[in-house]
Image 1: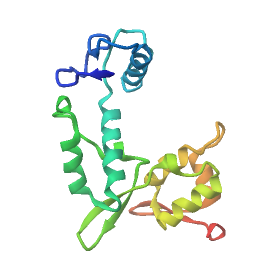
Image 2: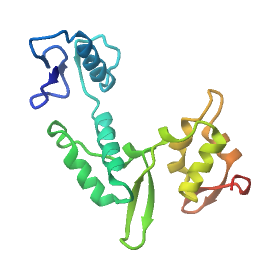
Image 3: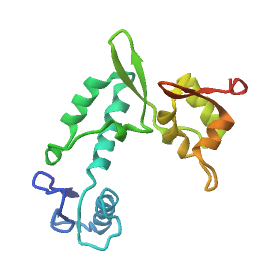
Image 4: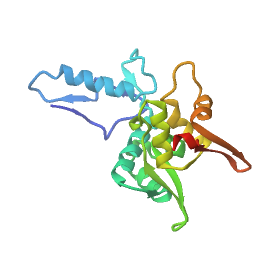
Length: 191
């Protein structure tokens, strides 16, 4: 069994070996390697050169947001979500500003006139098909019209090295440029 003591952790300077606590029986070398790996991928410096890590609070915040959104089973008012998200953060992150930009590619934003608030619905980009045409069909079946900046993170993961988001949008969507900002709709051939 392997445990990590987190109450006293300073997220800016975690000594990996010092904070891994094992029970005395059994071989836990594999478990220690897994914990080291998890700490490294959630740190700001993922090189592995230092025995200490500084946790990337944005990665922790995004993880917490994903868990909350997935558990919601439907639209959540933004104000309510932000409050719950703040409460879910580890106490070491007190004072960290949670920004909506951390929610990119995790959810769809819509404005609900009934409650006069933006709502968030769990819609992770990593669950979308990699096939571009299918990806755009899923995007436009979930939401008819997307603000340009909101759809971009959902498109990026399907890019090949030589492609740009703009090229894919021009191929699979109609981009409307308006005073309030650009939006994207499905091309009639996509429907």
